[in-house]
Length: 445
Ligand code: GAP
Image (cartoon, rainbow, N blue to C red; front, side):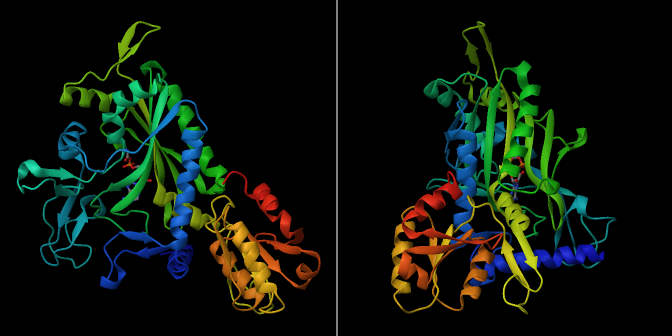
């Protein structure tokens, strides 16, 4: 491993440690030793994740005329997964070690000896990644169904319902955020490849002849969404799939990749799924899923452009991108390394912290009153423990964009200091103008 790789790995470990220490992300069921590649979002993590989902929803549903939302159930009719091709084809080729019993993706192993113990490996066998479960009171084959491995099938099977009820016409899209489940074999890299994760998916239905132009449009649009959230452009890139990489349903696919400390990896895929899914569901269900275009007097199965992203991967990319270490610290001389999360203010879990300079002279009471007013609008924090420098550092580490300090001048003229997390500049603002001040800075969040 090169020196740069070792440094990147160490940085990743410090980010994972910060996530646990400060309540962003915990290993699931940790007191029982954890559940492999399943993660829980703590008090700050759930706020950050909700903000990411809200930003996506606002951008692709609320602010567009050609998109509607959906929240389909995780459990679906088992025949959905026959029609989609998942029962027969959603598998990884795996090999088992006869000696140590470990299992590997065949593509990750070189030669025919176990990478863990050198033992003999079995032939590669397909291993389906769907979680099987039983639905209803009888435990037999007919009761078998699956936890969905992607959210989009809920969109395809509801295509006609949405078309009729929303009175939309192609080109238009259906957007959804929800949990998906995959029994991943190659896991690791923190939340990047989890067994339970959240996707945000758009299925954008277009006349067949417009598919290419909408593919290009969505690829640029989705890339822009990440840069608008503050992700650095030099850490983002597009990568077109090679012919042999394409999924069975796609004629074209490009990934939006982020440069994680463990290398360039996929954040989101934009695919041209053609009419594969609607055609298959039409065949398997016997229902007509075609759209009749009144103006052109023609009936057709729309083609689908699918921007499909991961909420957890976006949260991870945002954390990595925002994380900065400042050797020697920014405040008091001689401080150890300080870490700052330079999250976009709209995404930050806590928007402002209200801090009385000292715990006397009426300052805590005044600060609490300000806190009570602000918390009606935003998630804000109140902290009176420890030195002011230490309290600023705690907030910097969780990405709080503003520190509001109540000091002796507040008690005389009603102004407070507002400290900016990134520039550390402080301005005095009248306490009764704080809501206005913050609204101006925080925008639509
Ligand atoms: N409907 C198409 C689809 O599901 P995918 O490339 O398999 O395509 C789309 O998944 C996105 O879902 C990925 O770009 C990634 O962000 C996220 N994703 C997929 N598997 C994941 C996993 N095991 N853990 C976390 N996120 C995952």
